[in-house]
Image (tube, rainbow, N blue to C red; front, side, top):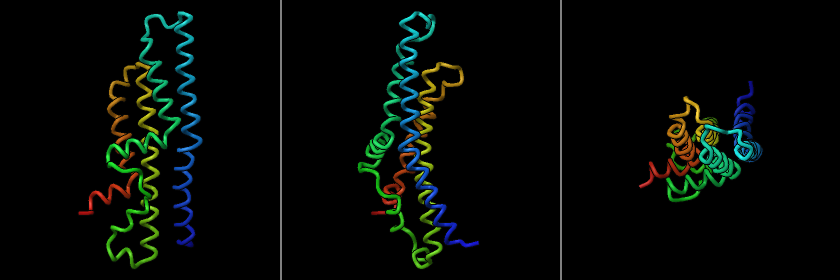
Length: 173
């Protein structure tokens, strides 16, 4: 097995997942969530939502849909709120690694892949957090913790996306 090729392809996969989530998936899901809110508005206008909450589910769909459409900016805003700076490149975390890792090219590349995967998981977490917030619009019995779980996903995901800034804030004086 060629480890160098495996490591390079693994890093490319993590970067592709980030690109897919930030572009295509967030736009499609955001449009679907907004369309769901529009369907609820039409149902309400036709009198088909009797006995169901009216304004809150529609507002949740629109707000979460807009946040999903601008996923990259949403995550950037949360990172700005948490760290006081914008999203730093994931590889900026490498400058705080011990000398033993800096000397080994294989270890350095493996760590770079790990950092990219942490960032990719962060994007997935923010995406999932917004979906959890959208579950609040359904008003089902299982969604009472969705708001808090969504908040934890968004905040934790933003910290993972900004892994370079997180490492810098932990290790710089």
